[in-house]
Length: 161
Image (cartoon, rainbow, N blue to C red; front, side, top):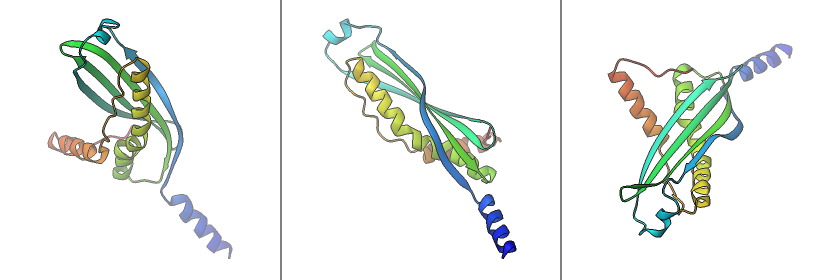
């Protein structure tokens, strides 16, 4: 009976594990350089979005993933506002092979963080007295696949830090 318990415990320890530990805002920035004059103009915005992710291994099997959304909104040729949020999470990830770990950190974790970052960004923008951005969902799996393809063409491979 003890051998069966030991085998079950060993199998459980070797099974892949994923657990979200914490979600938090790492950095937040808002700038409206043409205020208050921008509020008196006809509103015809153009939106530029930059999206970036990075990850860092912490102690043991903990990893920090940071999703950065940077938005520049112009009204005509003038910058109405610039907003940036770095939404981060700490994840416990154990017993994954290198490819699965890379996908988890590069696509799965950012998928979890994006709704929080989008809500934070919308709240920030509306506090600046601008209309909410209402960013469309992002397919991080497709972005990850594109990045893998680009790296393979360049002769590299994704790295897990």
